[in-house]
Image (cartoon, rainbow, N blue to C red; front, side):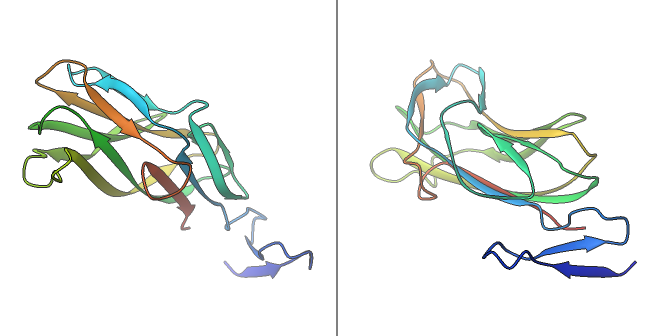
Length: 169
């Protein structure tokens, strides 16, 4: 089970290849480019994907418009954060990692204690998940208990809504 470090010498990051030739340097980071208004609040799930994303870095993967496609079987670590705003704090706030085979709740709770004075909340998460080659993954956000008044904030950088992923092994 040895690994070989390869590089093209072109300034690209080196890639570790396992004995089977698979790429084990798969990683990405992406951010929502601009805010989305009134996406949830009434219990509606909002899939955070599509042309609202800006890709910051992508090595050995296929990350397009907020959807990550696993280049090979393995454990992937996903981290991210959602910067949200709405009319009031809610006790039904959820963040999910959605994959081909599973929907994993990564965060849930009441935002009253963590909401800033302007009514905004940053919700972070980390999730280790097995993906088969070709499986897709993306984030989902849902707020219940009110009307559809909750926004998703983005600025194209990692200061607002963003997510990252990396193949661990």
